[in-house]
Image (cartoon, rainbow, N blue to C red):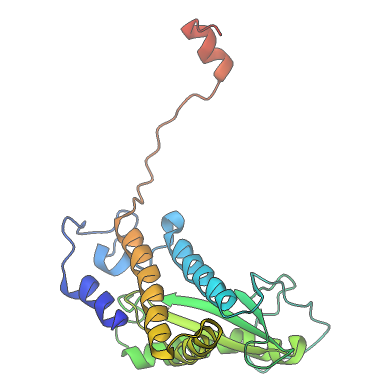
Length: 234
């Protein structure tokens, strides 16, 4: 229900007074606003979803750490060329005992815009498969072999869609929170989806409405000179 509600707001209801073209590229605004990195709004959206998930893991009774540093590699080789081999590599969230007792679970968030030109030809199912596969190739093998933990990508679309692995994680979260707080699991599952959908909705509207203009006014920050010229005394 929450995913449908988000899509109704963003797709059926036409937002008024939107620019025709993007202010920092030649693309139509409707195609670029949800995929534009100028202003840092895509990062804000990613971090909002990450932080909501981290709090949900804590609500389920787990210790959750955001941006955990992965162990340094010592010559390990990986099947995929896109595997993350950086010394300062991090996942988005690390949770103790989520799938199995005494075993770490790692998660990485990805929010994609189905309106981006590179994705516009894909169905939602194909977009989810592509995004999950990319995250799995980047992190899974390293986490299994080096961290000896489990890995799941948490993939969403900007309009509220949730990829299959993410749905499995949310279902498991609902079970744990329902048990911990003695609530009906279906009620908790619905509440989780609404909370995540509104985190996406708020930040998607920020991506659409926030300014990306690059025009700055040069303001003199020489306080001593300004005070002297204005003859201000304290």
